[in-house]
Image (cartoon, rainbow, N blue to C red; front, top):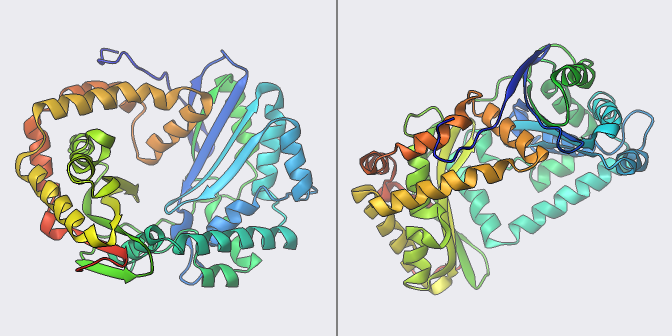
Length: 419
């Protein structure tokens, strides 16, 4: 590869009955990681049944087959097997990691969890109580209130506007049949995306996948609804007692297939994703001391990136903080980044890329993200060269297209003065 970083990931593409798997084979350590997902996740939960997929995912490792929750946990722990499932906004995911000697048992337990989960009453009650506690905790903070209201206003008629983990009301009323239905519509033999990394050969992986997924029902999960355009809603205030207010702000982003995707990522790193070097951090924190931190970037969901940021400030200074934020938003839209800012952002993104692939778990998870984004196997290898080829005028053009300070939608939670 002739990329500036000299970085490459040797991906093998292997067909199997449910689709194909990406494998990065590495026998330097006796460890194997496998990650997999289906499109759907919480977006397939029916209205009023929010949290069904998330609760079902959490219960898959709370007992399966003849093993109750303690027995299942002991079986994993005794062989140092990591196994987990999660339902996000638009994906339902599973993963395992094990030493090669324990891999057969890891696969057996994972398949058992997916095909014969127990849903014992004690486990259901425990997982539900934990989710309810997390829900209450989130809404006790200005950040939690602002985030909840922001997404509900931005996508009022789409699952993206609902809490993927459920609400207090939906969690309290969820039944075991509803959770089982969530699994039945989601975990199918078709539509699977699979990635693996570590000390495993293609032949062994093919056998593993047949055992892991062969007993799942035929067919594919329902299609997740496409993400509609961001609904501009202006400015909202959620009043709650707090010495600081949190503002969540955002607007329409762009699709991952957009030719300006990487130019937008670089531009947004300069604006709000580069830590202390970003323009927003410099203007809001370093020059004026308005907040401890501020960030903005693309939040990826349903194959689109939504442009979103957040900042917390003293109630008396929230209005000034938002004014400075809008001014920096507008300045980037008007002029784009400088040549120095472009070079620094590209250098960071290029240099940081290999750090995302330093062990088998991160490699499997990173490859799965690429697959979920419909990237080709050679996308990684070409990324450093694509970043290096970006020009300042490209970033200025995408900034002018994306950043509209007057269109920013904002939710402020707390007791902001003057708003």
